[in-house]
Image (cartoon, helix red, strand yellow):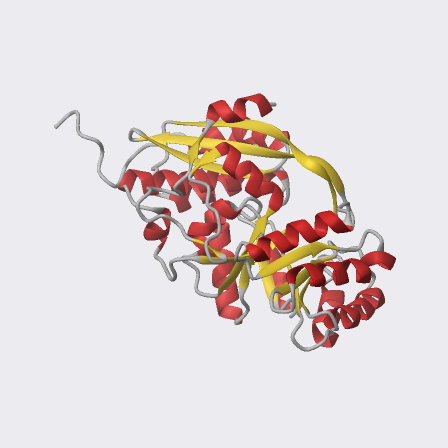
Length: 370
């Protein structure tokens, strides 16, 4: 009949809308190499067959400009059920701009919105569409900024453990001479049984990182993220080979495509690879990183954007855990109905909510619009 909705093929993408918002942090924040007082989120909405898909990236406003001026036109009219085709077309379109950085983050937001749209057209949860491997994604609480006082550090990390999250991460590296004392504060706040992670954001030299790894091991640190720059593959490999037993070396959050991830894996640079679907090409790129990890025998950990990562992480074979990052948790609960909260230390996608389970609360977000 003429008024019937198109079937699960040949559903043209009608339009793409993009908006950007700047949300102040709840306190000054810093890590080993950067300081910030706000976070920008770029929201993409895609339309087809009477349905709307939602995706986003934590990126700059120039990312929104690229989506609006180029990528929206690239995917318009393409089949909403053929997300890989739109993905390939977007990568081809940015050839002369360069793949990493802004271009990759713009593609990420559109790709995630298209996967959400496809799942909603089929009226299934995204994890169901992708194929569930597990029903929940373990998380670690992430914050512990170098700008925090000892009291703030205790309250945040200890609060997560009290709420049932058995692993937490803190920032180090801005003032290396203070790092060991801060890690002692963190260990005292979370007790002996919770896992403690540290993230230097590449602030240490190789020898400095080796020395700190030995000291951190005495306090039960089991995860050392970006002990040196993630561009220093030899340095990461050195740390991986010489770090104390039981301490994983992790990096990968600044991977923008599969070629980046392959370099880390081929170099033997990490015990755990990190990938961020808001940077590495959306759901498509994130799943690709998971395949590389599976082929390499290396687990994958999701970087930030907890509600966005929950569904694809539950469809990944070699997945370890997901970063429940303080800033993004605040924004996702403010902007999206359906944003997830950990239960017993894990995020559980709702199989009864179609797509990624998120609904954009535009009115709540409006005051932060750029």
